[in-house]
Length: 536
Ligand code: G6Q
Image 1 (tube, helix red, strand yellow):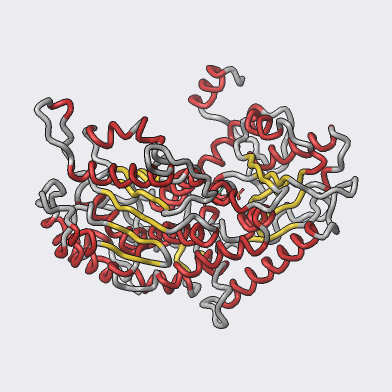
Image 2 (cartoon, rainbow, N blue to C red; image 1 turned 135 degrees about the vertical axis):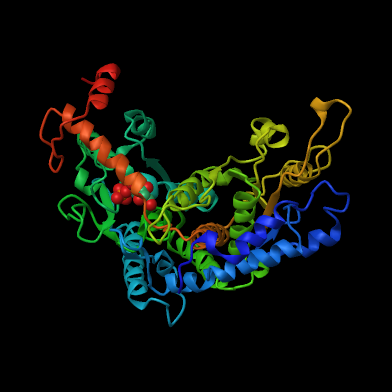
């Protein structure tokens, strides 16, 4: 494997030339049936329709060269096989394997990284038996009653993925089971989550890879006090998911503990026990395994080197075309599915924490753009809000629309001859077409310039399998982009800095010496702001 800087790739200079005159989507034949059927790619039940991107065959050919030159599929295969890819040359770095894919490489007799997959299988077996204990009444509360609610306490990677998938798949919950999430150290977050809950039926799942994240430890203590105040023994209501050997693996404090491992980054941890425990509780063991099946199918399919046959690779390269060559600074992910309400927030973390980097793998400052700003909200709600800027603003925002042919509940109403689901999809298509084609009008204020690119990502129905598929499409897309940009998509110094800075300030205002919290002497700006905010 060779790690070449993006600017050194030959295809990059060709793409710069081609970008001077990109394909115009306002041409009459831009969205012809021929183009729509040619620019369509299918992977594991999803179709990507990308005729509304500013590309033609020549651009696609050179994007393919870029992927080949950057050896992205070789690196992807190496990643899945356990190569140490979380590193920066010549500088101290995490120096770890990147093996979230091992959590789902459980269906083959010859997994790519047998050791990590064996650990994943062991954790899954423990989950299966824990869920069976809940189902058959072995694990019950003080009054012999079943647990009905699981609250996950965790933040960042220990929250967003599991939260996004739980909301996406609520439809498939087991009867009498539901989940809630507390992430923010804002006491109002926890207070609101606890409103109306019968704590005696609640299991709290404290999730922290490090076992030291202050927000999570604080919220855990808040829950312990809430149980005690309700006359309940916290140790009988708490479980944990944490790194092997972390302080949170303590049988005196938790009913049981599950593990995740160093080689799984927080934002890639949904398919480990970080997401597995709460999804297993809500959907049942088989429901979670279906998610794993979907992710695994994409992990295998994404080894395909031809971008025209590989949705994650195609989306990675279309993203690079828009961002690095056409100069589009942001990317909107707009699901036409209310169930995916938390998915853009998860992608925001997964993408921006992975690819928001300024140092290349070779240790120098990058001389090219890396990850875009990623954001989004479900349609059609967004249409009544920020789409104005998408259509007529001065910033051109490429869009990835996500839609499903069938609703989850099939709870339809026919109004004016169409169902709600038909209206939903019709809106999605209409938006993609209008953004691309624009509309001419004598009144400039009613005129739409068009030439605003989008891709439609469509599947049959949002099932656990399809959710797994969608998750892995994006995880692998992000990794492919990182390989092209030659950055380390798997560390997060920016997040670590936040943790250190908050600890400095808290150590100053703390009324006691808290465990491992070192006393620091603060700088003048920190002191001034503490005083201004009234914390000192
Ligand atoms: C994810 C990040 C970050 C992390 C949280 C929680 O990739 O590293 O979002 O997940 O800071 O960390 P813990 O799981 O260690 O509590």
